[in-house]
Length: 138
Image (cartoon, rainbow, N blue to C red; front, top):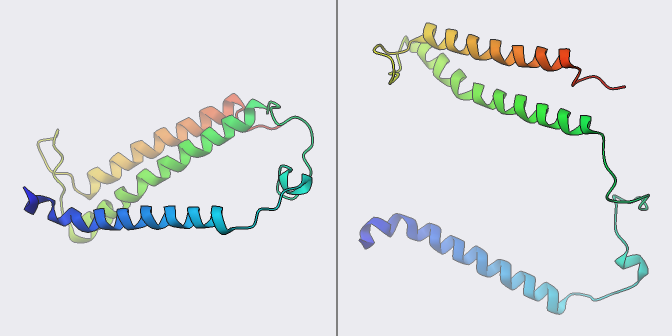
């Protein structure tokens, strides 16, 4: 039982050391650090600018839509990186990769067609959002 946990002992020790050192640093900063109070020190800091207006004001929903679209397409690009590695190794070595639902292994041509379909769907989504006006600012 202990032999199976032995590889994780180093990780556990590092986690304990990091947690302990963090607590020691926080306690020392709280007890030894300077304690200056005043209206300027206690005022909210907004990137060097004085606070203007209510902090609970509503933003236009277009900001959120653009942020969500950015995240969506950013994640889609992240999915392309493993495909690039698999495609280049399949194309360079003329290798094949076993694909479970299919009876035959997937070669470079299959991977290229799969990414073409994926990219076409991604492009269709971008064109759909563009046509709906999600990227227009008035």
